[in-house]
Amino acid sequence: MTAASGEAAAWALWQDSPWGRLRYRVVARVLREWCAELGGEPLRVLDAGGGDGRDAVQFALAGHAVTVLDRSPEMLALARAAAGAAGVGDRLHTVAADLEDLTALAALTRHREGGSGSFDVVLCHDVLQHRRSHEQVRADVATLTSSVRPGGLVSLLAPDPAADVVATVLREGPAAAWIVLDAERALDPGTGRSALRLSPEFAEDALTEAGCDVAQRAGILAVTTLLEEAERVDDRAAADLEELEVELSRREQFRGTARYWLIGGRRR
Image: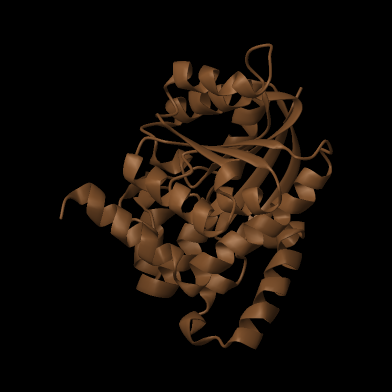
């Protein structure tokens, strides 16, 4: 098994874990609320770095037209298969390219005449922490913003560095947490590889610099990842936990404990 295939297998295992499935459900519900403010359905959605389409299929099920951009043909094949199995294969399209491929991004504007800014919503979830540097992330956010129409939504999601410290002290103790506290990189819990630690403040600054007004903020999984027994939660408790997490995502005081930050910028 190659390193890349090992990471993909670890990521798939995390996605199918109880907290992984919950992450996708909570994000889908939060984004449904945010997108309701855009109007003009069906929306044109770009999922940049969308992999196997876990987020994208939810948009397609809601009636939106979705394009998934990813550099892995294998992951894109999984996205198409998932969309087909869900009965929305005609609403999901894929493009094999990296975020840096501006030519490919420009080609996606076929949905509307007039060049860049054709999408109503651009997602970039669980991707930016895997880029080479903070400078590259800033460039990526600018590229993503150029692909959304004025007034459209750019949605960014990444692990919150504050949650790294909490998770580390619970898992490994305070000595390990001291090491993580001010580190520039940390192990990604989904893939097990080294990842950038991106604060929500950094993401907001990058969005503002790219020409967005920060309009929405949410914390995703404020309590779930602290539950050691999450794998043993029954269906009723899981449903209750989902409702709790959706409510906590809206409350500012719980953002600092959440495993992920989710930030929405509206292009000026």
